[in-house]
Image 1: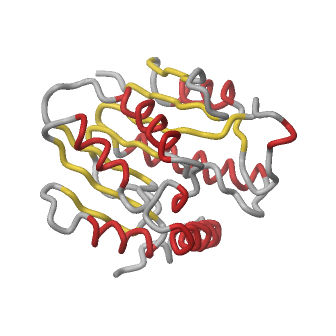
Image 2 (image 1 turned 135 degrees about the vertical axis):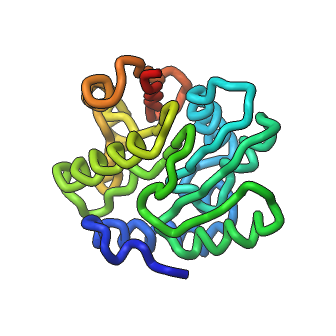
Image 3 (image 1 turned 180 degrees about the vertical axis):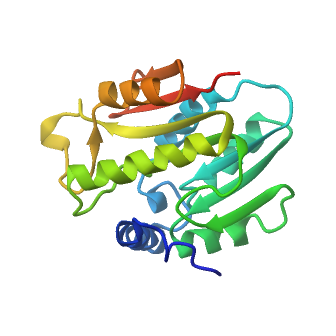
Length: 216
């Protein structure tokens, strides 16, 4: 498997993140906890928010950045009849698990990378902005911003992503996690990517989801 992270300007950050998630997969297996979510229920709730970017009854293509072992594909397959799916992740262990899990599925591929390489109708990214480990706010925001640029560049119709919220209860916040200001992120997307941006912060988790619908 070719390592496409070696030339990435954020390769040190991505290497640490990959190790973190590989350890979660090793500990918890192909489950919500294996990609560092608390439960299957909360994972499904996140998927429901991300899918609000999809506004079509016709076949579509989608990139899943930070795909883990591919759980979002299962959710999509229950909701939509025809789509092509590309899963992208920085963890080699996650990609290998996903390839084993879905080796017999049509219109499905997995790539070890830090960003989508092919343009798709939609891009989604779930959880990839949460675990900053030892990075400072400024360092993490540089990675955050560069990743949003990649999501925008490789989506035709729109993209969606989620973040932990800075409105979380202070006593529950952890130093190694990144809590984004939803107003700042909304403003950034609104000014830079599209007039049609939605901020979802009403689904009961300590996070928010941004939907960016691109101009026709």
